Length: 267
Image (cartoon, rainbow, N blue to C red; front, side, top):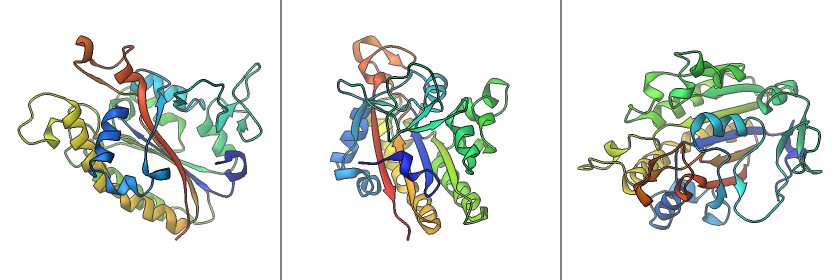
């Protein structure tokens, strides 16, 4: 069992959100052997099914940065790893890292962490006031067109840039790195030759691509020391089920998301 309260201060923290990734898509790709790198990282070699904290990127990430990670898909209450001091909270426990802060990003910064955001989808692009809200939580944030949803090699570009920034950080300074993977967000047709419409198959192909691009990130972290890693989707998306398409709606394909947490040991 991971006890977050014992790790803050001694471990880097990594949070990767695979934007819009459905639980069933992630589980199917894993079972088919299409995500071998993730398979080697996931506890017991499988994703955990959880419920998203919001039905679209902005809402979900506001919740996540307030400490509300995707919730286990079983009756609770479930204690959270990170929480902000709030009277009446029923989901904090002895293993919860409790911050006197408005968000976990500034909470970790107050504990000595350098906070770094590598953006992906439009809510992180800093092109508008809205697109600067979430990146603005971090001491250092970056977005480039090569990181966005229209870039076929976005995850490779994001990871390559993250590796550069990790290498530039003094080894004694702890790091909170957030990376929003845009490849699994619409449009994903480019990852499946011949596809003309978004589907579970095109998203699965996008995830397979991202899987191949992620290993340098974990190698870079392991060179720094141990890291507490969280991989999850912020929300899912519908591909025509019950007539629904997209997200920002209440449907199991939107609420059921993959989640994993583990310790990346030092090299």
